[in-house]
Structures are given as C-alpha cells and as structure tokens.
Amino acid sequence: MALPYTEKVLDHFMHPHNVGKMEDADAHATEGSPACGDMVKLYLKVDEKTHVIQDVKFESYGCASNIATGSVITDLAKGKTLDEAKKINWKAANEELGGLPAVKVHCAVLAVDALRTAIENYEHRHGLVKEKIPTTEDVVMKRLSRVINPLAGQDVVKTGLIRAVRVGQGEVAVSVGLPADHQFANNIREEIIERIEPLWDVKRVAVTFIGE
Amino acid sequence: MESRIYLDNAAASRTDPEVVRAMLPYFDEIYAVASSQFSHTPGILAREALDRSRETLARRLSASPEEIIFTSGGTESNNLAVKGAAWAAKTAKKHLICSQIEHQSVLHSCQWLEKQGFSLTTVRVDGEGFVDLDQLEDSIRPDTLLVSIQQGNQEVGTIQPVDRIAEICRARGVLFHTDASFSFTQADLDLSAVPADLVTLSAHRIHGPKGIGALYVRKGTPIEKMMHGGYHEFSLRSGTENVAGAVGFAKAVELSGAREAARIRALQGRLFERLGATVEDIEVNGPGDMERRLPGNVNVSFKRVEGESVVLHLDMKGISVITGSACFSRSLEPSYVMMAMGFSHERAHGSIRFSLSRFNHEEEIDRTADSCRDVVGALRRISPLSS
Image: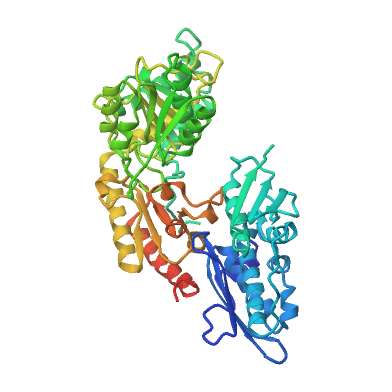
C-alpha cells in the first residue's frame, strides 16, 4: 500500500500516546486554530525543584501528521528538564516518525510550537521573564523561520523563499519569491501574517509576491 | 481488497464490465483510424462505431449527432466551450459570467481569459449552493458574451435550474454553457426544451472509461477550435478519434437509466438517515431537498474533527471517501465551493463527501455509517474543541 505515511506515523496516528486533557496542569499552550485546520493543545506537569517534565498530554484537532507529531513530541518531552525539552524541534520529531511528506510538515510544526510555548508560559509564571523586545528584521526572520515552505517541507527562510523584509513604524513588509497565483501563495500569505501580526508593536503586515 | 467500500464515484467510478467488453474489440480488432466512407473496410467499421456512439449521446440529450464533439474529457470540453466561444467572438463582446462554484476547468479558463482582456463576473451562491439568479440576470450587460453555470455541483450535489438560466440567456441574446460533467444521466437534460448552447459531458463518473468526454455545440453556435490539425470532429477538435473510448462512453450512457437513479437515490436517503441517527453533531452540506441534489451525493460536516484524519481512518477500515479540508487539497486551502457557500473554515475542514454508484448496496451504507460513528467518536475524544 502506497499511503504517503510511514508505518510509524500511521501507528502514532491510529494509537496516539499521551492524549487527553490534564486538569491540574502547571502550564498549557494552544497553537493553530480550527480555522487553519490544525490545532494542538498541550499540557505540562513540571517538578518545581528539578524542572523535570513529569507528565505531558496533548489534544489535537488536525490531520494525521498533526496527531502523530503530538504523540511523539510528548513521548520525547516526558522525563526531560525544561531546558532539554526546549531543544526538541520538528526535525527530531520528523526523524522519530521516519519522515513526513514535505507538504505536511507545516501541520506537524504546531505540536512542536505548542511544547515550546507551554514551556515559555511555565517560565513566565515561575520567574524568568524576558523584556519586551522591539520588532526588528531579525525578530521577523526568526518568527518566519517557523513558517514552513510546503514545496520543500523546510522553513521559508532556510529555503530562500523570503526575498526581503522591511520594518518601520509598526509596518512589516515581506516579499516572497513566488508568483502571486502559485497554488500555495494564499496559504503562505496567511501563515506569515499569523506569525508576525501578534507581535506587540506590529500594526500591519503586508505580504507581496515577486514571482518569476 | 474485495470488501472495500468505494464511495468516491464523483471523482472516478468503476468502469462497468459491460463497458469494458464493448470497448475491447476496438483495441485489437477494429483498430483502424475512423476514416471517410471511401476508405478501407476496417476504417469504415471504426467510423460507424464512432457515429453510433455519437448518436447514442445525441439521443440521450434530444440533440443531433452533428452537435456532439468528442473530446478527452470534461476539462477539455470546458476549456473548449469557454475559450472557444471567447476566441470566436469577433464583436466587442468581452464579458463573461460564471458562478463561484464552477469546476476549476471553467473557473481557471475564465480567469485566464480575464488576463487576455476579457472581464469576468463571478455570481455568488447561497448556503445550499444555488446560484443567485437575480444577481446573474443583473450581471448581464450589452457586451456579455457567455454565461457558464454548471448543472450539478461536484462537491455538494446542488442541481442548478439550468432550464431557467438558459431561458434568461436566450432572452438576453447571450450564449449559455453548462458543465454537466457531474450530472449527465443523473439529472434530466432535454436540449430540445432547454436552450443551452454548449454542454460539457464526461464518461468516467458514469462507469465509462477515463480519457473521453464530449461537448455539445448547438448548431450555429460560434466557437473556435483549440486543437489544430486534421479535419476531425466536424473540424472543431483535431486529433485521431478515441473510438474505443467513444464506444465505452455510449455503452455507459445506455446502461444508465431511471431505475438505477431511483436505487441510488434510495441509498443516498439511507446514508443521510443513518449518519443522522448514529453520529451526533453533524451538518448537512448542500441542498436539503433531495430533488434538487444529485442522487449519488452525500456531504456532511462532522463538528470538532478534521477531515483528513477521518478520511485516513475510514481508509484503514476499507472505505474510500474525500474531504473538503485544507489538509487534503493540493492548494492547502479549504474547499472553495464551501467557502463560497459561506461556511466557516471549520465546517469545510470537517466535511466528508460520499459519492455513490450502482455498485454500492445497502449493507455498505450501514457499515459506512457505523464506521463514521466509531472514527468520529475516537477523534472527538482527543479533540481540544470537545472540552
């Protein structure tokens, strides 16, 4: 059978680990939304002294890649310290799953993001708070490195899809190296806006396509 | 996979064994090019088979055989109808009208023509997928050349009142094309009564082979060919005729009848009823009035779950369906048909299309509904939207 998923992906999809709601969680985070078709909610139980993740659970509204990644990411995080768990990226999850189809990586990233955000949330509530950093081109690029290029299954920065970023007076302009009528253009536009718009000092995000 | 329940017939249906039998001689016995009546015997036999097939299609539509142009399928027919009519327009008529939910071969042809200097009005649809007839009529201008509105919708099964639309166009002196790719033999279309000028037909959704379709071109309709070459298909479509395909198409048309449509209609009702009885929180997508819905189409949204997961789980259970979810589409966007109908993204993401055929039976319908209950139940248990 030539389904596009590895046996490991299918196994985690059919029988996901660590699923469900955690009533007494120390921190939780939600990434994605029903509107974008994938949503993950992740819960953490953390040892206050050792900062070891004692328990982790997730809930998924999403496709097979999303569910399978939530399952492996929670397996990987369990028993690790917060600092160790922060280093878990989608590459690790992807390797664990034996590889996801490139076009599906953006669904999988949400679970990784949810883990990171839940850890950040925990840190915010338990001491270490970072100051508000003004948005610069570097900050935008860093955020954009979490937007996946569906053509390659890697982020849009690494794959050279972002041609230019300009930041000024609350406006962020992003140029993407794709034709405006490309099949993924609308999807990429929405994901870029979703990543940049929440920044505290950004009022408007303009995405232009400079396709060849 | 003998027990597989195949419910994706609106994409492609099983070629009927009788169709296959009818086609076989045209591969290894009568394989000559269908040629003129003054040719050699095999060529004449091929020509006669092609003509008989053309007559079968024409009869079904109450049309003349010379009005049937064989093509490679629905996409080519839609391209030929829209672009061919546009290129033939020697006048200043540069305005096109279509609906938001046309098949992409119509939509993208119209959008391409827009880049060539035509203007396009896209008429909206309501929550059941019906075209806004008032807006359609108001959109017709002195320079309107063509209106293209499908007969039956590919995703939600809405049957448009093409008889009324054809009358409106006729009264205003505008060409009318209807894409009947998804409705041919499933919904009535009598071209002696309905003044449509161009009609797209397709074979592989009614148990005919892939790679063959047709365009009905009413006598006198100005249309320019797209495929240049020899004098085939009344000089409207060059290229060696697909005789075996045409024979198969005609056989498929002969096999489809009113009794079968009634049987599929009953299966449709049963599936809607069973899903409603066994799965909580579902929404019906498309017309509630079954008389205005293609008989093989069932489309529902399961709240709080995402469609690709449902499709994959059902596939594991041996059931083939599709979804309007972004995760399933080649553009990573939710179904444009459902967006046009005003649905939320979530409703589109949770939508599942079941399309039935003559090869389905009641026991399959019941098993499908039970499997949906199990799969949707399991996915809802892990959904953050459930709590």
